[in-house]
Image (cartoon, rainbow, N blue to C red; front, side, top):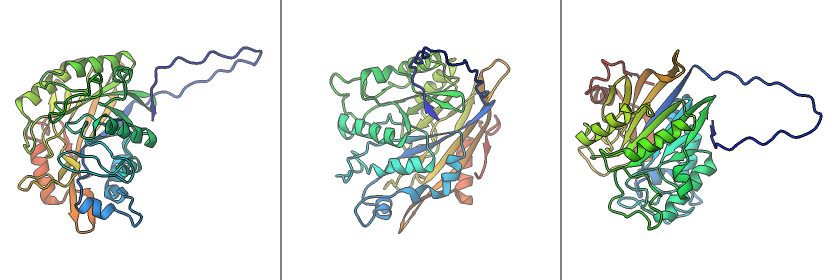
Length: 356
C-alpha cells in the first residue's frame, strides 16, 4: 500500500540509453476493505496494567493477537484512532480528556492496519500539539490518516491509498469537539460536520474522486452514545453521503455500542462499529460488543467498483485480570450483535454475519 502524492514524474534523463518498455500488471478486479470501531486507551485499568513493561514502556500487541489474521487478511484495513497520543513516557490521561500511550500506534501497525480516521470529539484533547504528535506517530508507523491535519494545504489534499493498483480515497469528520474550539487561525485542523450537514465531507470526497480515486470511503464520528439505533440526523447524513456519486461507503463511530448496517441505493452504511478497544466504566450498556465490517469491491463492466459482498464479523472486548484482548464473539454476544446489525434490513439486503 502506498499513499498517493499527486506529484508529477521526473523527466527522463537525456542520453543514448536504449528505450525499454515495461507493462504494469493489471489492477485487481476486486479488493477487500475491513473497518473496525473506536480505539480508546482508558488509563489505570486492565489494559494499561497488562501492557505496562518493566522498563515503564507499553506493549499493546497482545491485545490484537486473536484478530491480527482478520485485520491483516484484508487488502485495506481501516481503524478509528479516537484519541491523541502523548509524548513517549507521558504524562498520560484518560477520560474525559485523553493523551494516551504512543505505543498503541505500534500495535495497530503490527496488527495490520493501513489507514486510520482521526477526526473525533477527542481530537483536540491535547491541543494542536497532541494532534500533530498523533499524525507524526502514524506517519512513523506507515499508517495513512484522514480527518485531522498539520497544515491548511494538507487539509485540502485528498487522502488516497493505492491498494494493488486500486486507488481508495478516504474522508473523515466529527460532529463536534466536546466544546473545545478549533485553534485560532487553524480552523482547518479538524474536519467538523454540523450533522446532518455533511457538505465539507462531500467536497472532500469530490476532490478525492477528481484526483483519481476508484473508491471513496467516508468515516463519520457522531451522534449519540450508548444507543444501538442511529439518530435521525445520523441517518440523514448517511443518506446524503451515499446519494453523492463520489461516496461509495459510509463508516460510523462514536456510539461505543454496535449499530445496524443498512443498504441504501445499492451502497452500504455501517452506522456504528462499536468499540474496538476500550474499557468504559459505564455499565448496563454492551460496550464490549464490537464488529469488523468487511466489504468486497468488484470492478463492473463500466469500470467502476461497487460492493459485491458485505460481511460483518462480531467481536468481543475481553477484559481480564491480566489485560484486555479483542476476541471472536462468544455465542451469546454473537447472537446479540447479529440482531442489532440486521435491524434495518441489512441481512435481507445481502449482509452476511460470519464468525471470521
